[in-house]
Length: 359
Image (tube, rainbow, N blue to C red):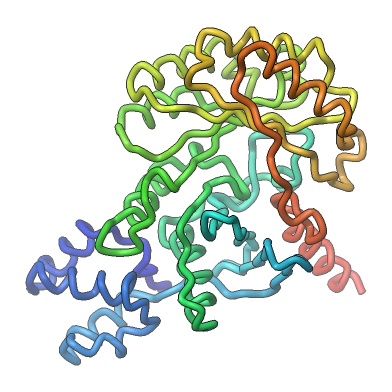
């Protein structure tokens, strides 16, 4: 029987496990420190545990459920993409990005995606399953271990939950993951240094607001009207803009925290002045707490109908939003030269594996 990843237990669950096995609460604190501060990768290395305790942990838990298959690093070293294999042979991607403010890791939350966004590489393969908490935490830990091995004293300081899959479609595991990486006696990644992105699951946005966490929220919007958003994002047929923005208002009233709105610029699709004015009108009454990120599109071979908006049109869109009083920035690009879009490296590997089987 497959063991559970030790990274899947939050601190309270670890405390409960030790108490259930006749041990003391402080034992969980010791193990937590070994996992996330000293960052050892075996129970035998936890030298202040008895041999019996170490053996019991080894009998019940594994460490990382990820096997690294491929690493792509951009020539400028700003972006590194990792392809990992899970215990059931499924593939996921994780990305390390170097910013001037620190090191950020973009994690995946599902194997595949069922949201059906027509421009996205992540959804080229339908959702197979949710990742466990341990599989999500392990992505951060695997990269932190790589950094530790380089002896440069670097640490993961920021996390974005924007990889393959819809995070709020795996809500319980994602929220537990956030609790683990935010723990101040562990990885201590500040809540305000963590961002979760959703394509618009309105009910989960409300639930997220009720958690009253300081974690940032981003919404993949990509269109300012229902007709266009229905065409680009299947989720809009269930949670249209009226329902989505009702949840947005609930979130803002509950938290008084800013929301980032992601807007991929698609050539001659959603990048006209008409859409710019519609977007400004959509955000007008929440402009104080709304920030728009205009994102250059990373072309995906399987979605050849879409291409990147010309810089001139992007700037015109940007200037219109600015003139309408909307907070807006043009997202800096990362990883364009290394299968940048989420899911591209995974899809390429899957195609290669299929070709080998046929041969």
